[in-house]
Length: 285
Image (cartoon, helix red, strand yellow):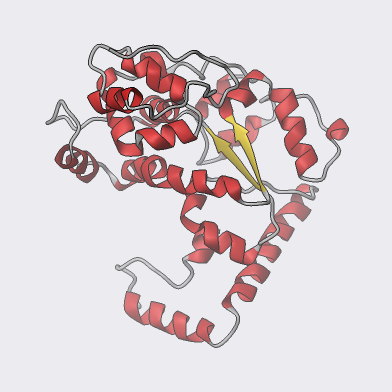
């Protein structure tokens, strides 16, 4: 769907001329219902894929769909969206450990606008896009939670209760949970021949909670501060990760503005984080 949304836009090195192709495509599709044409193409592509696989439902998943949420709603306004939300620190740790994405600008100890710019400018496009997924995509996806047809899944809840969460999702898709197999990663063998997906899933046969708190040892305090600066304290709290912020405050060199946020009453004492684990606010020195 990302490619379909970008139909007509080509690389600047295209021998036929970028502006010529884009202008011609825009004029041609401007005379017809572009959304209807795009929907017909997607229907045909998905339909052929399902037919060859002998299935009736396809889950088209990529974090990059945050870039075209309005386009997806335009083409399929009633389509269910499954939104998997995860602790931003854990996302950053996964980017670092799985894909080698650096989370600090080497030339700066503390995070500032200049050091963040340095961090982004020196990265390859693929890695910069991964950081964009976290920094720019997360707020858009968070706002998407209010969409009527969106089913929200908390990663930590999924890891703790996989069977329950999977059955809830299957029911939400209009299927009978009783007809589904037990949750496992045994059917992930197709990833061997795929160019996408986390390779680490191939090492596991069942869902476990080992990855939930791995960020605490995979990230330095400075890297956590970088992520906090990029995302913002308020969004972390809106997503239900106040407890993780408090864990960061206990670090040796905690971001002072986070401490001030807590001191100013930015968080209700009766708050409960997104994993359903209640906690008691503690004084911040």
